[in-house]
Image (cartoon, rainbow, N blue to C red; front, top):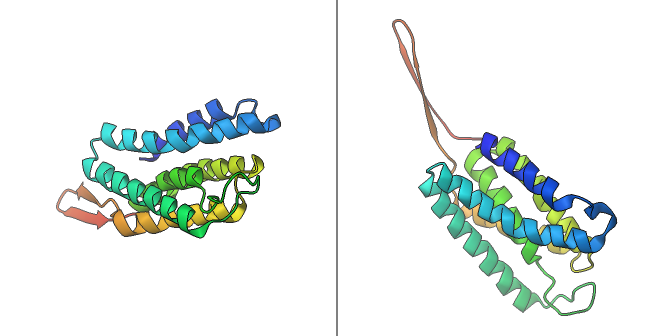
Amino acid sequence: MRRAIAPLSTAVLAACTGGAIADSDAERQAGDVLATAMPLGTLGVELWRGETTGAKQFALSFVVTVSATEVLKRTTHVERPDGTNDQSFPSGHAARAFSSATYVHRRYGFGDAWPLYALATYVGYTRVVSDRHRWADVAGAAGVAALSSWWLVDPKQSVTVVLGRRSVFVGWSTPLP
């Protein structure tokens, strides 16, 4: 998974952040793109790899994350920093982005997930600098995504078979969370 996700995340970050450092509108747009591209990319990679079980688990976890986020927004009534409405907590953009990172972490381990965590954190940063959210809103979104992934996603198990001259070794493993 690392070979597929890491280049994808690097390419998406490079495409979305070019020139964005000096312009908060561009940063906001980069966050908007990443919040959609990350889940689509994660699902696409799983389907491309033939991981239908993982794709189904990601889709379910994503739907639960987005649904829980919307319920929390409509029940907590936390005002946005820019004062436009009272649906700041948790950040929907960050929840979508962190759903990819936490899914990959749960399914394949932190070694495959860290680039996605970096991208998801950047999405949260774009929401904070555009005055749409506070860091607490981003942290809440990450927590919702993590709870959903740890509840609904099974770690990918792998079997290793090593043939020796007079022996066979069979190993069964799951990635560390």
